[in-house]
Image: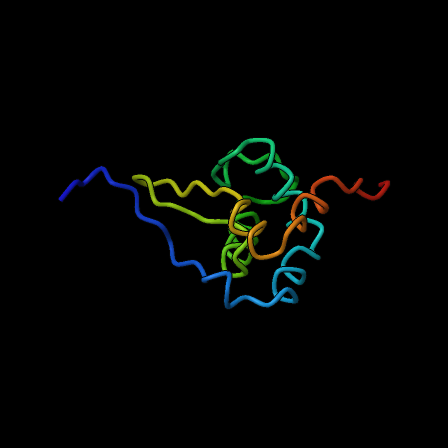
Amino acid sequence: MDVTADFFLPQPDLARVPLSTVMQALADPVRLQIIRALDQAGESTCTALDVPVKVSTVSHHLGKLREAGVVSTRLVGNTRPSRLRYDDLDARFPGLLTSILRAEPPLG
């Protein structure tokens, strides 16, 4: 057995995830910031994401995004890098993630 292999945290089969679950996960402003940051980074840990909340809050939101099928998270040693499930989401909900990522954030 290769002890350096990556292991992925459980994530749902998107064929079983309703659109409402994905939309609910993406409705939170912090989660939108997280997916935009992941889109730019490709993959990142909660400590490396530039989001103006505590690391524990980022970790919580990444968990919610993973449970909704929006991100995948792998275990690499003591780190848990996450990335968008872009291709999976696009296959299930064509254009959804692209539309959300391209939408202008609200004026603050």
